[in-house]
Length: 69
Image (cartoon, rainbow, N blue to C red; front, top):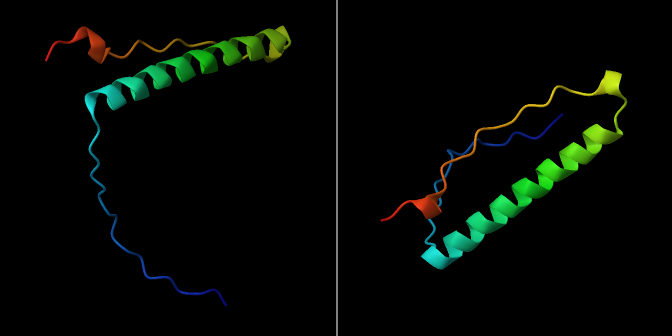
């Protein structure tokens, strides 16, 4: 028989980030998204044409660096 585990309610974690830390994280996210896109393109190029998946492009997310505030 399996063990019984009591389900706990989800917990909320609050963190504080400095603006420079947030900027670094966003830059890393953008870099990683670009790397994923490049790897997906390379993978598609290696697939035979009949097995290729249709390509979709996501709309760019608003960039917080263009906002003032």
